[in-house]
Amino acid sequence: MFTGLVLGIGEVVRIQPQGEEARLTVRPRLAVTDWVKGESVAVNGVCLSVETFDSNTFSAYASQETMRLTNLKALAPGGQVNLERALRLADRLGGHLVSGHVDAQAILEAITPCGSSKVLRFRFPAHLAGQVIAKGSVALDGISLTVNTCGSDFFEVNVIPETLGSTTAGQWQKGQQVNFETDVIGKYVERMLHVQGTRVQDTPKSNMTLDFLREHGFA
View 1 (cartoon, one colour):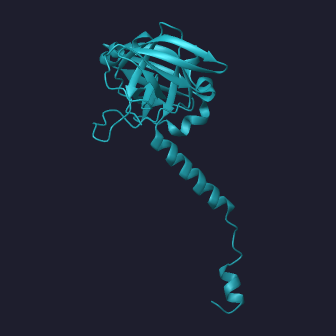
View 2 (view 1 turned 90 degrees about the vertical axis):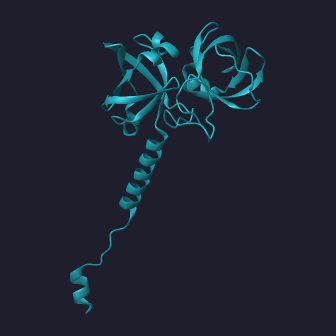
View 3 (view 1 turned 120 degrees about the vertical axis):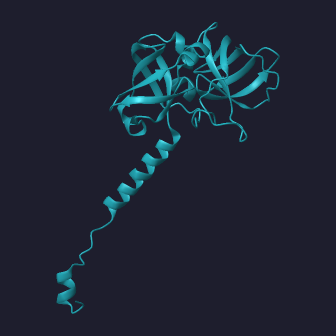
């Protein structure tokens, strides 16, 4: 589990394709001296497990499903990625709960300057609309952002100067595909409502009416 508060940017050093899978070697810009084998790290918002590491780099394996659903497949040596280590229970929750399980790709449609910030408009698959609400949270390439406004297949976020300077968001261009994760709480709420609605619809209607009770002497 993560917060969407990016630790820093990393540089892709090497990509080793293995069929439809791959191993990534990444060099964080910030020195990390206490990696633990098997720990979770978010790479552009994708939860991966650290396999090997040294004083400068770490490597992680991306499965076929991960490569299919995320923009990791578009990375090349020299490319930059957002990095975040897993949340500890004692940490401050400054962003929102991010699982690192990407739902889809969101496409950047428009960039509008707004003072020192930028308002970014994204298009996303409409079947996820029930999980995106105004003033709710989304994770874009692992960055926790607040939804300004949204519709059935679009949303807008405001990206402040600090985020633009410390993450890859400052490099995004129109047409960019970013890893998109909806709020995990929204997923559970939508699922519960769907299940409850199904149960209500599937419940057989009773033939018990007031007239029936009167006819049989119960009322």
